[in-house]
Length: 229
Image (cartoon, rainbow, N blue to C red; front, side, top):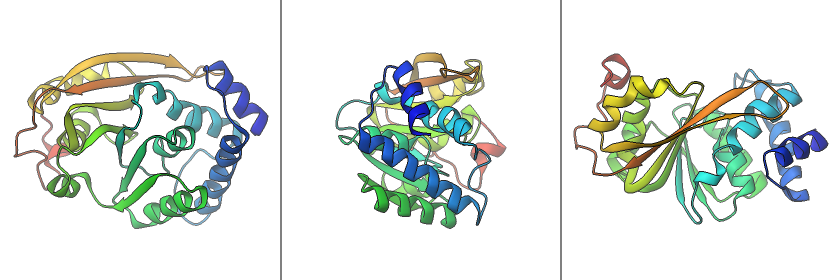
């Protein structure tokens, strides 16, 4: 796994130290161990994990400024936050998930790898009540379609901050375009990319927060999903 990870990263223009490579391997081993106890990820093959978990997560690395205070919404198995933390000691991440078993796993990884992170067992709607407009960067991967995703993420983002949504198709932005406007953001850029050594094509949808999110958002009771903006 080590050599393949180094090769793929190199083709992305990313160099890794021995410690970083070791941390990725340890992270993978822990992911597989926890996955044997509960459903953490469907991707367990080493090659697939390198391509579809690690390399994909690192595609957003260049869009995070130095020293950024970051939030990952719906962290699940820790993607993209943990790969980004392994590579970027200068940033701090808050990892969130509503499922306690997943946050137990995340805390174990953070402790084992001594990552600069805080883990919270909470929903984005609840976090927005206490940490509203508190983060420089908010990331999300495989959480929800674009409109509800914006409603979860943008209230937590500072004015002047950036949301990074990992998506499959650029056209997914269209479904959330009205939500972006209502919630105080604007489209900065859609960045398509293909992971080396694969046909795995994805994109980053980058949003800039340009004004405060109206206080009524995020809505309670699952309304973000049931009645998208």
